[in-house]
Length: 209
Image (cartoon, rainbow, N blue to C red; front, side, top):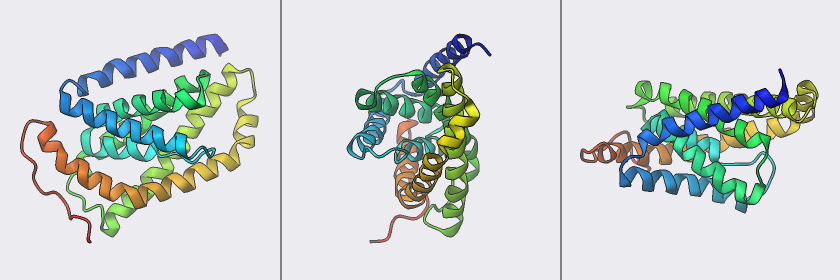
């Protein structure tokens, strides 16, 4: 595929994702929550400038699990904008958006089935332990392959050269999600009724002191 056409397709997908996600942040409380989550993820990425060690995938996945795919995409967009201030923009930025849309869609699809999951129990850890590495691996492939084509580089070579970074990414993101995901999901799940206009009700089990 022509590199310019591929990049144009990526831009169109990213723009569509932005428009689609904006429907989930129509009220002030959700805007504030999306901003806090996105800024927190990007701040981690700036403070810890180690290649392939990032918190955005964990935060986006958890936001989508608890609050839906659209909110997950909105969080990802804020995080990408924040991280790009320090990391710069490039063809990869467009594909980061597309990749995080996939992560959010996976989280959003699993959300209804895991709504009453106790994330501090073994079953919750299992769900996160399977979903996080799968999403992270898919993210790396989606970002690497079209970025390589756009930059007129062999996608196969790019994947092979980046294998060590991909392994690092998968390992750290999975660890972050298993350890940090349960308390984040517990907090977001409790906040969901309020964001939807209801009252907060206990869901799952609170962290033990």
